Image 1 (cartoon, rainbow, N blue to C red):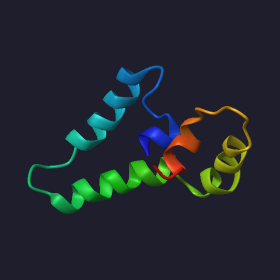
Image 2 (image 1 turned 90 degrees about the vertical axis):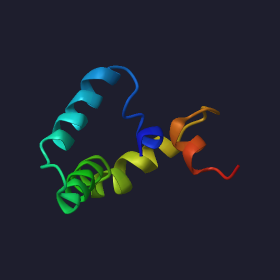
Image 3 (image 1 turned 90 degrees about the horizontal axis):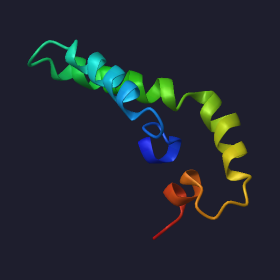
Image 4 (image 1 turned 120 degrees about the horizontal axis):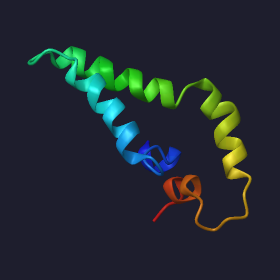
Length: 75
């Protein structure tokens, strides 16, 4: 997700700190809470609008090194 969306490029510290803060709010030993928190972060980032609007627009590029193209192309 981070590579495809360029989530941690630019202001890495602030976005990472926000994600880490959400995770540290989960009580120790609460595996389900941990998974719910990660799911919420992923859903917020890769919501329906990402798949229907953002991704198609990012794929319509001539840049050879687009993060989206690099993440979706086979190696």
